[in-house]
Image (cartoon, rainbow, N blue to C red; front, top):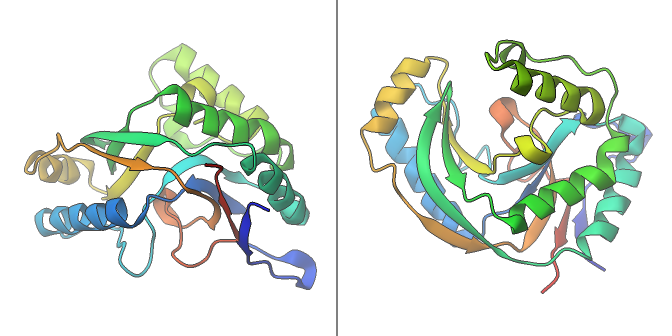
Length: 224
C-alpha cells in the first residue's frame, strides 16, 4: 500500500476544512528553503512565515475547502491515485515577489502538471460547493483570466488548477508588498535547485497557503 501513515480525528471527523494536497521537498531542499527564509527575514523583519517549527515548505498541487464528512473518502481516493503516480524531478528557478508573497517558482513541466491535474480530477467532487471568490481574483485586470479563475473556483474550489496552476515554494509573506519587493531584490533571486519527488501529503492548511508542520492527515509514497 502507498499509505505511510494516517492522522484522523475519529469523533465525528472534525478537521480544518481547508486541506493542502502537496509534495514534500525532501530534506536537502527543505534545509535550503529554510535558509532562504532566514535570509529574507534578515532583510524584512515583518515576514510572516516561519519554517523551522511552525510551517513546512512544500509545493501545493491542490488546495481547497473540503466537506468534513468526506475526509475518509478523500484519503482513500488519494491512496489509490498515488499508487499510479511516479516519482520524478522538479527544477526550482527564480525567486520573485508577487504581491504579498515571495515565491521560488518551479519549472512547469509535464510531470508536475500531471501530478496536479490527476489529483484535482480525482478529488474535486469532495470539495465544498459555492466557495467565495477571493478579492484578488475579482481584481485581476485581464477579463479572460479573471473569468477563468472564477469558473475554476465554481467547479473545483480553487482558482489555481489546470492551466492556472503555477507550481512554486512560498518562502515569505508580508502585508506590505512594497517592503517585500524591496527585500527580495536585495538577494540572489536566480537560485536554481532540483529535487526528486517522493512523498505526497494531505496537510492542514495554515495562513498564507502554508502547511502546518507535523499536522498532516496522511502521507503517501509515490511509485519508483
